[in-house]
Image 1 (cartoon, rainbow, N blue to C red):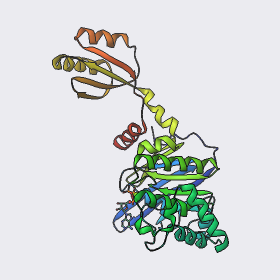
Image 2 (image 1 turned 90 degrees about the vertical axis):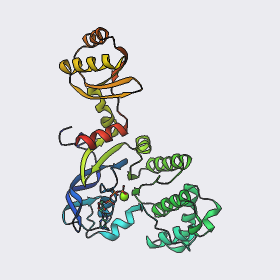
Image 3 (image 1 turned 30 degrees about the vertical axis):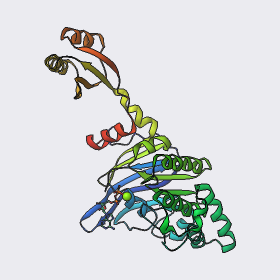
Image 4 (image 1 turned 135 degrees about the vertical axis):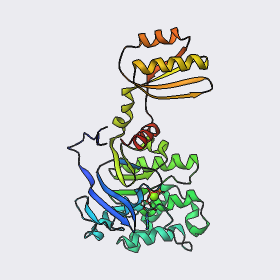
Length: 320
Ligand SMILES: Nc1ncnc2c1ncn2[C@@H]1O[C@H](COP(=O)(O)OP(=O)(O)OP(=O)(O)O)[C@@H](O)[C@H]1O
Ligand SMILES: [Mg+2]
């Protein structure tokens, strides 16, 4: 993957650009020359715990200051355009932003007022967004009594109350049950369909695979991979997955022989079945003949199609 950038959307409009951004917390280098171009649409910011996802979001919002580099969001500078950014951007934080004693309705109304809405506008609009996120009569109860799923819904509602163009959702499906997660993903898709841009941080890759059009993988404070989801998943094309069964000795002899003629990336064994990942190339007939010669049964030989999880592990472990 070269420098990890397989993006070929040079002409696309970018909502956010970051160049060589460095953020330090004491001795911790949270963002290490972090550079990305975030296009419109639903973009996943993916990375392991401590990778720097939340730090990047807070940096763009002007909540964390950076030591060097440059950040732009819709052409605005988080260092100087704080109020303008607040108007046009919604933020669903990772951790609670709820005031325990306030009801869901009061809280969303309050955030609406903070974004400059009048009380007369903010109350009906709050009902509208609470309906949208699927919070019913619970809106009249203090948020301290909410389940995790309800809290996530209110957090989303407060992020969209002022109808922002760009949304940052930090771990929006965290702690939700499978049905709740599906509903949250559906809400995310519906928001995007109304021409909004979303940057979503997550490590729940199955969720992100369903909704994101574009992916940024971050590890150790650096953007190691970025580009369209379809291109990322297509990278499996350069690899083949061979599954064989047989006597352990025969399998061993076969893989030894195979390594001499083909580039073998990995070999793993489970319940007497061996999975071998090979670099693509070369005809399959000699390989099948070799298996026959060793008394090894070929179960399948096919492109190693990547899931987002596979692509993620490949990027993080192979350094992309
Ligand atoms: N306010 C802070 N003070 C000190 N260190 C911090 C602070 N915020 C973040 N860090 C450190 O910066 C690094 C990146 O943290 P960050 O919260 O951005 O990671 P993340 O990718 O969001 O992780 P997670 O998936 O756990 O939410 C971590 O080493 C973290 O401990
Ligand atoms: Mg985080």
